[in-house]
Image (cartoon, rainbow, N blue to C red):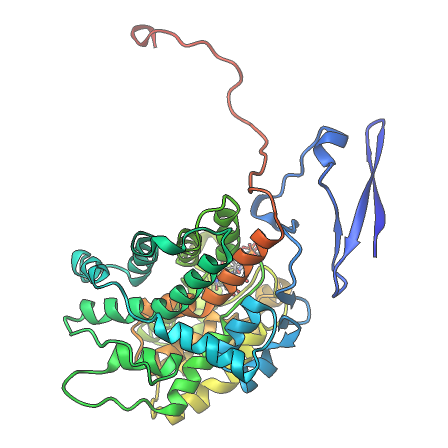
Length: 427
Ligand code: SDX
């Protein structure tokens, strides 16, 4: 529903059109803003700025709602597979059986890496952070697969999409094996996506590796929960880089780099490290809640708070319900889960957190499950990237399909005004 917003600026009165999304979100269309007013809007971190119109994911932060293409996350995570969700996000609809088989088979066909790419894993230090290796390897894909770089060519885009979804788990698992001095376990095309990843990670050539179907399903559900989240930091990076018509490998590399930050995807690793610190310190969660309240401490409760959710993150809610069942299934008794439960209980009854609507986010419980699955802590954010990949791809593709202009924001300059250079001898 269109409307009008009026802005009074000194002796000027300027009208702007407004718009409303399918879920009632409202926006002022400020495309003519600078020309009409001589002003720009200043909004560091884009807290109040929509970068695009999108039909992929909807979040209602006040009510803790998350939909992918109109489907509630709780329905998808219980009733679909990760590759079905990837198809939904990228193609816009849940696949028919025939579409699913075609999509899945094409991705399975692309799980192998160019043999020379393995040298990258041998080159980097074995203690390199897996997110740094992931970004380097994805960027290198553009050098090996030069026949799928053109973002304006539909066939090349489809090929690069299937290559990325097929190869990302192989890259992650190969580096893991290399970091532990173990032989690579190649993809097994008979296995589904999550099962194949588990075998590449934890299998050995010396004995058969049977993937527990329930464990593979848990991993598949974790990937679904992470698959997209509208215009988060890393997705914005992917859109910004893609807006210059950089290829998909380069754009996804920028998403991986943005995701690695501890305020974003790196938080799942930071949560586990925080819980371990609290445990090793004796388990006094009240002490750490006090620390988080104290601005001078520089300590934040990792896994708490969110730019958009001012209610319980629905993904965290699902994980909070599931974590106990998963650990029992895996026969894991993790003392950090008790710490997490206590921390959540204390924080959610504390005025500092309540006043700021700080609730657990997706990263608060996911690490406890990854650890129970045997994933090393420094690979938790890699797991986030494996899940987020189809969301990055869908958002990158939508940005190009909408013909959005190259991202180039303005600024307010606050530096020195005109100065004259004086010779160094006189400085
Ligand atoms: C993800 O955007 C997405 O969708 C991201 C994501 C996705 O799926 O892509 O959901 C994934 O990144 C989840 C968030 C993971 N990060 C963390 O768990 C790190 C800890 N959380 C925070 O650093 C923080 O909550 C952010 C970064 C997530 C959100 O920060 P905002 O929206 O910029 O909020 P803010 O930093 O301005 O905080 C508002 C207030 C501040 O206090 P005041 O200045 O009002 O007194 O809340 C405080 C903050 O100091 N605050 C916290 C806190 N988070 C915010 N205080 C203590 N502990 C925290 N965790």
